[in-house]
Amino acid sequence: MKYGKITPEEAARLARVDKFRILGLTVSAVLIGGLYLYSHARTLAQQEELRSEAAEEAVETEPVVQRVLFDQPELLAKIEDATNTQQEFLESEPLQEVFSYARLQTRRALESEGMRTLNTEVSEELMADPAAHRLEPVLLRGQILEVSQRQSAGGSRPGWMGSVLTDDGSLGYFLVANAPKLRGAPDAPQSLRAGDFVRVDGLFHKIYRAPVPDAIGSEALQSASGPLILGFAATPSTPAVPDADEITEEWSRALLLGLDTVIDDEVARTFEKDAFDLQQWGLMAYAKLKGGETDWDAAAELDQEALTQIYESGEDFRGTPFRIPVSINLDTYSTIVEDNPLRLDRVTRGWIGNNNWKGAVKTIKWVGPFVRRDLVREQGLKGADDAHRYVEAKGYFFRNILFTNKLGEPRRSPVFVLHELEVFQLKGSNPVAPIAMVVVGATIVMVITIFLLLRADRRKSERLRVEMVRRRRKREGREATAV
Image (cartoon, rainbow, N blue to C red; front, side, top):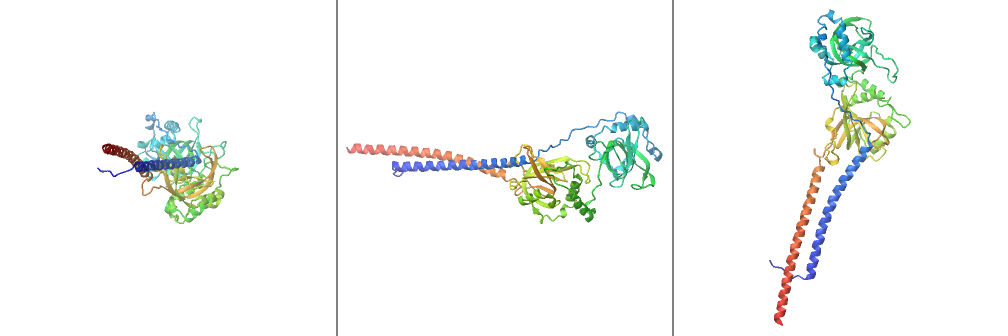
């Protein structure tokens, strides 16, 4: 390999250029890595800041329950209901023992055993072979046709016995130990009346036959047979929402009129958590059954201006549809619900935040008449690694609530009833992870390149030094010969 003549000054200059080039590459790699780490940390910090603005929700866990088996099966053999005459008679000893057993059963235990709702199909199955279904868990729900208090044989355990017309027109009977009290009046006596809507979670005892009115308040009675359900209590229920194709304009107008009675929480006036349950269930019914008919393209986007207006004057936007833009899924959880007109066992709730909401409202609470456990954010995954981090939704404003955020600070936030909630991802995938891999890969390549350049620079410098020493010695040899 031949080298051209080069002065020591030129060699020093080239060495300085190489050092500056290497230094520039090193600084660039550090800056790229630093910017990525800063951006990632800033994203997590913003997300945690939004999370702190939401309420600390106690997510319920489903306990493992198991029903204790009835330990007197010989008593069940004494129950007779093959004929109309047998159905009109309640055997005292089996009734007393089964009733005592049924009162101990909880709703969770009965649900874990596959409790079914009494309807025409279930009623026909029970009546076809009652002996094969003794003590099966059954949910009886509907409107009371007739009811009365009934004393036990000893007189120490009174109960309530009555007949119920279910949602689909089936007939059922119940015997319970407790009845509801007036809402908000804990000292009020228990009460059940004809026309009340109730729910009984209990056990099938036998086919029972008794005179029942043709309709609520009717004096005309006729004997009819139906399953008798024994349980701990009758709890309040509501009429079922009609099917989507049966919902009329009158029903929708009644829903809107019901929303007019809803009031926002204020500092000087707050309401109980369930104060407007019926109105919320009405709006959830509309969102579930009629939400597809809403012109969502014409609905306003929920931006900072809209949130400010809702915050300041919620009554002007009650039931108004909004499109919720791509936002951060702060929390999503599924909860068991009590009896409701949609006959749902669970709903999904959560909190959504958006870094573009810079005003007084930074987060919104939502509830949806659907079960989306797939949207529950995985524990331990934060920021870019969470596939369910971003969501977009369509929903209706319900009311503003006061709550305490996770930092213990008072806040006011709107509640929305959602028609739809979906995960948002670019091109159907999470783009952050590939970007992170590219950045890390580029940084590694730069480090390797810098290392190789440094080695090449050292080798080049060494060859240059050796060549300069050789030339100097050669020149000195020539000068010595000339002398």
